[in-house]
Length: 446
Ligand SMILES: Cc1cc2nc3c(=O)[nH]c(=O)nc-3n(C[C@H](O)[C@H](O)[C@H](O)COP(=O)(O)OP(=O)(O)OC[C@H]3O[C@@H](n4cnc5c(N)ncnc54)[C@H](O)[C@@H]3O)c2cc1C
Image 1 (cartoon, protein in one colour):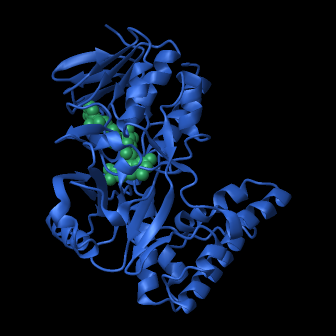
Image 2 (cartoon, helix red, strand yellow):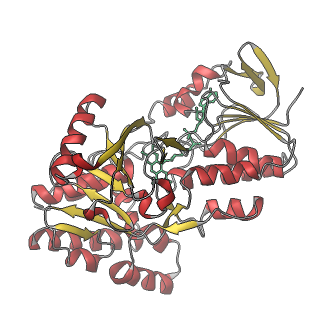
Image 3 (cartoon, helix red, strand yellow):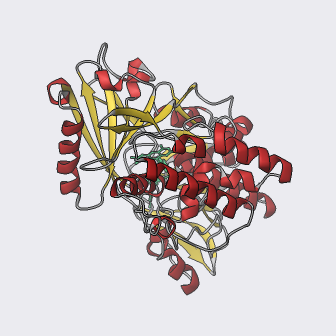
């Protein structure tokens, strides 16, 4: 049988591709090499707790690309709860992550001098980027290195870089960090609005106000997508890794899986773009293969802890970042959003760490850090579950490359977090699918 489209990979990018194309009247065959649907956006049961594939805060859901795709192709998004505050946990307790220049100026977890220097720096970067249009490529380190910030402040900035890009401040572009203060949105405004925009990010912006978490866990997003597949239009094959994407005379003609050939003139690949050369049957042009060699990835280690009772220090809605000693982490007490994610009266927390050394060393340092921050936690542990994952297929680094939806071959499209640099995670995946659909529309496929 010939298919209108074949999708390689059943993560959020592949499933959104299958949903949108099937709703556009195409019959779609999806191949997934693992035994699970959802890739990095799954939820599953462990000893009565429902864990996700890493802690997730989904960006810009009510207005961004996820909302646009769900609005056009489904009956609506699953129920979502506001993420709540982002906090820094310090030896002195929790402090909300500053969201504006004004907040940084009053942020008491760092010294007066650091506060003054860092808030002036943000202001200078905002003005440079949004008004004077500074096009130079600098790392966050390039921006902060001569500012006489203390070791503690540099550690905090480095931790924020790991959170934003998965890489250190030497590898993170300054735009990645300072765009978090609204530079990108201000740039798109007209002169008067941009002044109001600037004012908002100087004094009234809030962190966490654009992030959400689905009731019932991350997997609810995937479930909603699958429920919306039109009858008989989408077939998903599990445990079916695509060995080859067949290219003839520069055109996609199908895929090979377990020695069987499946024909289609449209193939959507959502695996690692950096590995594309190993999957396609014709050689990639050298300009393309040189570019995809630049793709860098980060690795994360997540430790899920089920606790016999709620940890007093984590009785809030939102998430926290630790940077002061040991391994920096980002943690979310997810059952505070939805108590059904943990057995009655218990608590479920995800702690995630960037793997900066070996996985084994990260695991050891991670546990030591958690116990040093929460000395009573060991006695409360009821369930421990570990995950080692690559959160995004391409980290945003100084010379990172995002290829967009078009491969060098006719009919072979690319979607996923290594094709589009905007936003992060699921939102970036949705941007990539929107871009792919736009190209398909232009080419008359949909
Ligand atoms: C610890 C952690 C924290 C995160 N935090 C956030 C967050 O706060 N907010 C957010 O929005 N996102 C977050 N993310 C990122 C988000 O989960 C991912 O970016 C997103 O799920 C990626 O979707 P994808 O479909 O592009 O890729 P994937 O989920 O990687 O899916 C690709 C799929 O393709 C399959 N595949 C690959 N090659 C083949 C082949 N040859 N044949 C068949 N199948 C194949 C793979 O098995 C996989 O299932 C986080 C991720 C992690 C791990």
